[in-house]
Amino acid sequence: MYYPLYEVYIMTDAICNFQNRYDPSPIKLDANLGVKRESIRPLRYRDSDFDEKYDHDTLLYDAFWSADYSHIILIAPPFRNLLDNVKSIRMIAHPALQPCKFSIKTLDRHSHIIVEAPTNTETIELLGSLGNFQVPIKKNLCSLFSGKKVLLTKSRNNIVDWIKDWACFYRDIHKADSILIYDNNSDLYSADYLASQLSELSEFSQIVVVDWPFKFGPQGDSNNRHWDSDYCEFAILEHARRMFLSKAQGVVNCDIDELLVSNCDMNIFDALERSSSGVLSYRGNWMPGIEGHTRSPGNSGFLRHRDFEYYTRVTKKFKYGLLPRYSNRCAKKWSVVPSRCPENSQWATHRIKGWLPAYALTQSFAYRHFKEISTSWKYARRDREIFDLKSHAYDIQIKNLFNRVNWE
Image (tube, rainbow, N blue to C red):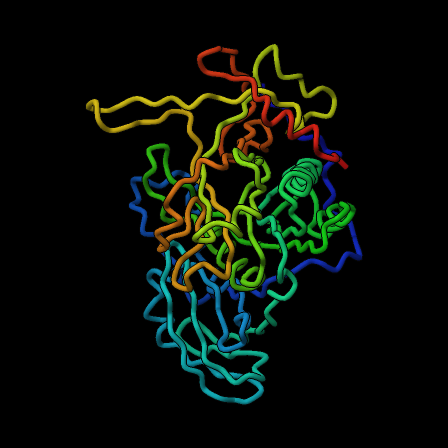
């Protein structure tokens, strides 16, 4: 059964004085010019709502100084058919009125423009066939998270109590002390409301909510094909790395429905510090609702992480007797010491691309993926499963961890 989110969570008019909010300065293409970004996905593989979900018109997400102030970074979706237009742009730094040299770095579903500019540059003027734009250049904010143990995530319309529970778990179990959360177009509450609610949590020394107003993008299919047009999350991760986190002690990349458990005697941040590479990658198990075992949501309309007690076992079979095939296994996630991450690597959802140690899996950590801690934005996730001893196991490990959390 699907349980609706109750209207009590609609807080779009909340006005707060909390200051730890960041707003990017996007540049949009002028629709009157008749130029837009095209997807590389063949038409026959596009769903009926593909065009509605696809980001045709964002030219730049944001522009800011690098952490060492040696250059300016323009974060963008992939330019695709617009690449030649971008290459021909003239850039003028203000107030010096000096022309700027720049280079384009093409990554997976994401682009950077690296600009050489005078150190007093406040704005860059873009002149070209795509239009003329004034781009404000933000100061770098990596100092905010210098030496911090950071939780990094994105969210859209997640129940605020879920987010607070998630933060409390990582604070008490893994000693996280800071949060960087990208709010991607929530319409049940404002970024200010979310920031004010998180500020009530104790023992977090730094919390920043980024109001990220961009289309998430069309997803791929169930056969793991056509992951080519979902630009938003890739931009979030690289924006977080370059704008906020390059000086952090450690970063855990995890969603609100994911809680990390340790199979050793260390929390994740201590393990990162002691690791040979500064990166740890791991897989997870689903935590579903079990009919007759997991309580009903009741009048509140939702459950909490600590209401779940069973995980789904991962099964392994062999194709042709040689190649292992896994069922019910969650995708890889990662945590990293940013300063040890190679400059030319890319932070992506399930791996750090271009860095060999990030592809190795550790057995020292695994995460639990809570199936009903979700708004079911992607697919229905609140159908209950029937208990099966071969498929489900009581999770004494996560229950013991729950008892150590101060749920505020």
